Image 1 (tube, rainbow, N blue to C red):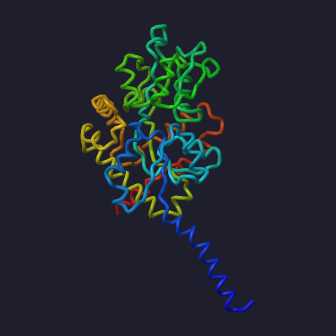
Image 2: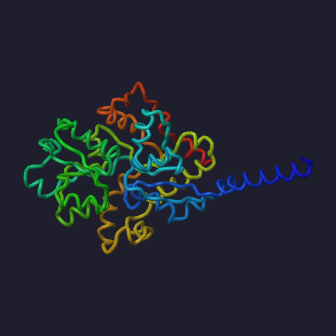
Image 3: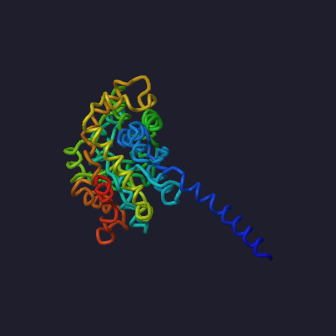
Length: 337
């Protein structure tokens, strides 16, 4: 083969291999959200709406997945670069040999509410202790954060896992339908579904995890929840992008702290509240206290989460978990320099 021909073939090969990598470099950072219209995950869409991703020079694509456990699977598979979901997944995944870390924390508390149907409440379902006797409790998905928390609340109330059953019913309309059809007698969900069901009279509050005081009472401490988490290896190899993402979300948390529920509601898509914007604003007002002011991990929070998970997950034990690898404020610090 002549030298000229070898040179031409080499050039062609370089071009054919370079194209995909050039496309990958230009591809958006895909973040999957565990139910994008949930108020606990509001910072994701709000950051986009405020233009903070673009301000940071980021090309971010938000996708929605109703159950957090499915979103984490997409992250592990490499189909997405980040997940907006509950921090507790980082601990659970570490027990399975996967290193995931939260780089921005949105909520100091779960923002979840265990609702009981009005029908079940009238029949004597007044507390988690009444889940005994084969009651069916709704969760977004098996292995999801609502699964973790429901099991813990039942266990703390003295109810063994064999005395009730869990049913994955998703969130929003599917959750509402499951409760109205009596497929679940109680279930864990978030705003604005909570306010919607209370307004219609279809449900009552059994356990409220929207405030710091109620969360400490129910779980024994703050429970950092909604956050942005990524694979540790991705953050290490994309430090600039990780820092810019952290900065963008930190700006959003400050915006939430300095604006009213009415002002924030103006920034979200109309389908988030439909024909009842007043109800959405009401739900948002009830939720604002749960958000962090700076996207940083609240002190002591990871230990509470570890305690909850260790109660019933054999692989999750203090001796097996390195909490320092499940979250970091480092990218927030880098972003503010």
